[in-house]
Amino acid sequence: MEIADLDEIIRKLVVGEKLMLVDQTMTTIGRSHIIRILVDCQGRVTISQCARLSRKVKDAIDTDMLLNGFNYRLEVSSPGVGRLLHTEVDWKRTIARKLRVELDDEEIVDWLEHYDAGVLTFRSGREVAVDAIRKALEVLE
Image 1 (cartoon, rainbow, N blue to C red):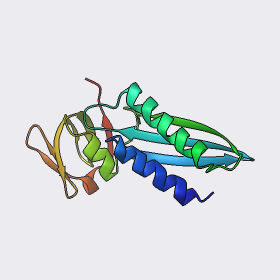
Image 2: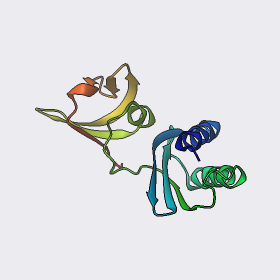
Image 3: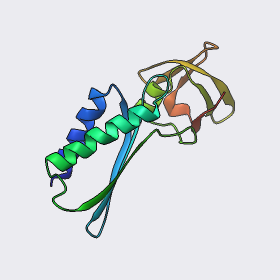
């Protein structure tokens, strides 16, 4: 199996489900694999969306015999609110969510309204360049 083949299949299935791929890892221990897929979407990803994607990925792996007899465990979930935000996918998926953003000299807690070309725009009208952010997290309301 080519890891690139599995990566491409997962990416296509994620897009087909209208989700955003936040992260994907595959760890190999002996002849076993652990495949972890983190997905999100505008609003919030649901358990049923994760379950549907999990079934489709499992079917693709099993049908195409991508892991050639290797044992594997598949985990599909949302990234959760405690995960640090730092990628373009993170900014896009957290639009309309409340964030805590730490800069060098201040902290902003506000609703993210827009992301474009490396700039976050908050409900208050404040704009922040992502390269000025030291740490950012989603805040549960």
